[in-house]
Length: 311
Image (cartoon, rainbow, N blue to C red; front, side, top):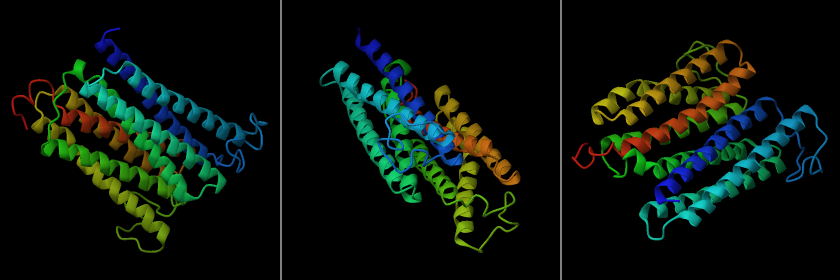
């Protein structure tokens, strides 16, 4: 198999791992929403003291989540293993991919440990948020690694550091913070603290209780992201004219952020229906994944533009 074919296959494998991690995050949201987080009791790695437990609804959901997590772990190990097996010694691209594979394995180990601690301590909010954050980082790393492996085919091999790449990177970081803030709202059961939309209980400066402050803080962060997302396509068009890939990423981010805010408005207006809450979790992960895609693409302009000194 030629090196280009190996990169292509490795990229596809890594995309599968990233998609599985996305599903794991969405499934984890469903576990919380369905109140199935202790469906296996406080046992780990066993479930209610059994390798294969008797199935109630909560047990089935939590046990299913653990099986998906095991599948993700195996995919990540496969990603790392194939990078070291196929990677050409001394090749800078394969060196980066090997490093990404190792970091992904480390994140999976941390994720497994956090999952165990979360169960043992019976779902404390702090460990639940760390668990979510680690899964998000893993997904983002896998997305970036898959894009990196496909860079030769896509013609995006030269990294550029300029205002556009910096803005895209920090937007991804900011999006990560917004998603974690949303996870904090959900795990502290602060979803009902602010009624009405877009204001909180009819006020733009609510000050009644800590849960209201947490919910309102998340909303304010999301509003800022929404405003910036609406400008992203124009920003990318100006900074990367003619770069169709960067424009697709920017438009995708805008659409996902708008959908996320609309779902959030519907959640508040309809007293947090479960299907909307689950959709909100999945869209949050999708927004972050799209932001990583945007940051990577903007930092590596289409072939020919970086070499021309395009900024």
